[in-house]
Structure formats: C-alpha cells, structure tokens
Amino acid sequence: MLVNLQVIDLSHSHYLTEVPNLSGSLKIVHINLCGCPCLVEIPWYFQHLHKLTRLGLAACWSLKYLPEMPGSIKYLDLQETGIKELPESVWPNENISYLNIRYCKDLDKLPSNMCKLKVSDCFNLDGCTSLGKFSELPKDITTLSLVDCKRLVSLPTYICKLKYLEELNLSSYSKLENFPEILEPMEHLKCLNLSGTVVKELHSSIEFLPSLKRLELEGCKRLSSIPKSICKLKYLTKLDLSGCPELENFSKILELKEHLKFLYLSGTTVKELPSLIEFLPALKHNKPQGCKRLSSIPGNICKLKYIERLNLKDCSRFSKFPEILKPMELLVSLSLNRTAIEMLPSSIENLISLQTLDLSGCKHLRMSLMVSFAQPHCKNYI
Image (cartoon, rainbow, N blue to C red):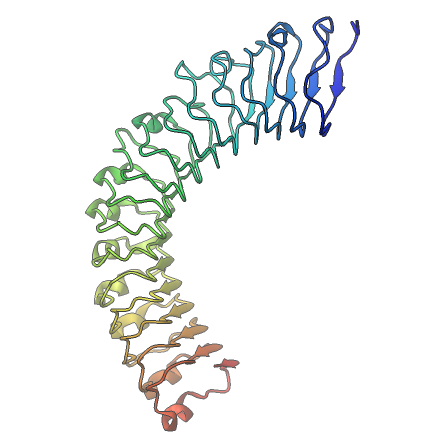
C-alpha cells in the first residue's frame, strides 16, 4: 500500500500487460505508461484517483478502451494508442489543457456532448484515419490539423464557431468534397489548407475569411472553379492552385490586387496568363510550371516590378517569350526548360538582375541566337 506515492514511471516497459494495483495510492499525481505496447487495459479505479493530473499512454498500441477519467486530469497523452472512442467524461472536463490523440488509427468518433476543454493552442487529429465525424471541438484553439483523416467526408458548420482559429489544415483529407458554408465571419483565420482533397468548388462565403493570407489548394484534382468572392480577400498573399487539372479559368483571382505575392499554377490547364496580371503589383513568384496548354504570357508581365522568379518549366506549348519593354530589376531566376521556345528577344538584356537562366531540354532553341543573352551577370546559365 504505497499511500504516499505521487509519481510512477513505467514508460517503455515493453512486456508490461497490466498496471500494478494503485487503488490505495490516492495522492498520485503523475502516471507514465508511454511506450508500453503490450498494455491492454487501464483499471476502472483510475477514475477515483482524484489528485491525478497527468497520464501518459502514448504508443500503447494494444490499448483499445479507457475508463472514465477523474475530474482532476489536466494532461492526457493518447497518441498512437488503439482506442476506439474517448470516455464521455473527457469532453466536458474544464481542467484538461493538453489532449493528444494524433495517429489513433482506430478512433472512429469523438464525444458528442458539449466540449469544455481548455486546449488553447493546437488541436491535432492527424492520422486519425477511422474518424468518421465530430461535432464540437475546443473553442479556444488557434490551429486545427486534420491531415490524413481519410474517412471524413464533410466538416460541421460548427467550425465557424472557432473564433480564435488561425490555421485550418485539411491536407490529404481525400474524401472531403465540400468545404462548408461559412455562416459567420472567422475573423482570425489566416491559413486554409485543402491540398489533396476532392473539393469541386469553393463556396462564395469564402469572403467571410477576411484575414486569410494563405490558401493552399495543391492537388485538388476535381477543383473546377473559384468564386468571384475570392476577390474580397484583400490580405491574401499566397494562392497555390498547382496540380488542379480541371481548373481552366482563374481570371477572377487577378482582382486580388495589392497583396498577392505567390501564385502557383503548375499542372493546371490554363492556356494563357491574362494581361490583367499587371494588376498584381506585389507578385514575387509566378509559377505556371507544367501547364501543358500554356502557350503565351502577356508582354506587360514586365510591369510586375517585384517579381523575383518566373517558372515555365515543362510548359510544352510555350514557344515565344514576349518583348521585355522595361527593365525587370528584381527577376533573378527564369526557368524555360523543356518548353517549345525557339528564341529569346534581344530585350532579354532588360533582365538586369538575372542570375539563373534554365533552357535545358529546349529542343527547338536556335543556338546561334544564344549569344544575345549571355550576360556577365547571369551566374547560372543552364
């Protein structure tokens, strides 16, 4: 009877199958059982250890069920356990400030009762591949990560209630077809990552993300359109549409204007960059790499005075580079490898800061004209 016991550490006891009897250790505050892969059960009396604040069970792969937790618990680490559901006593517990359930591959649902957890930083459900649905989440979180939650097909509209949420990561969430309508403004959300999902379109209510800076849509193979309301995201600096083969028309984004710095279009089916691109004055990186149908870019691209990199790699129909009518003082990298380019204009000399010029694999290039752009400042000529 270890009546004065406060801490017991049995972590990485690889052959431990059951917990010793601690029912008489009512002063215990910390139990560490992390890395006990043969442990199959947590005794029911744990709920009566009313001073227990910290319980570590990470990597207890054989553990399928948990008893109810005492109200005193503050720290609960369940990462990589085999649990199928959380005890109902966890969700309304206002003392819990740390809950780790990452990579619980058998976890198929979260409690449906009101969530009062005091988790205020990141709530991470990455790798919960069996999770089919959830309703409420901790209200004060700033980051919500649902990477690789393959069974989730939709998000509850409750997501709008997360008033302090700054980052929402749903990448590799392969069955997500629709991002929910945003019923009320999410004033603090700065990053939305939908890469690798099967969303077909974004709801026009995306305008209710007024602080959004980064919108990641890489690999959304079914995405066919972007709503006009995206133009109201006046602080958007990065838009990644690479690997979206159904997306043909992106002219709406050209009204984003002042703040867009990074535009990635590789792998889309755009045929040309509209002349309105000059109205993206802050653009630094323009990456239409791998756009097989892209045949031209407008001459007024030289008006993008802050552009640093232009990547046209693998744009196999691109055959003519426009005249550069004014110096592009910050462009340091131009990639034209494996395009159909035949020659570059003599005005290439207006790329006064160019350091890397990649023309590898340009089978139609007239070699006799290459002397015109072999400038001394071009350090990496490929």
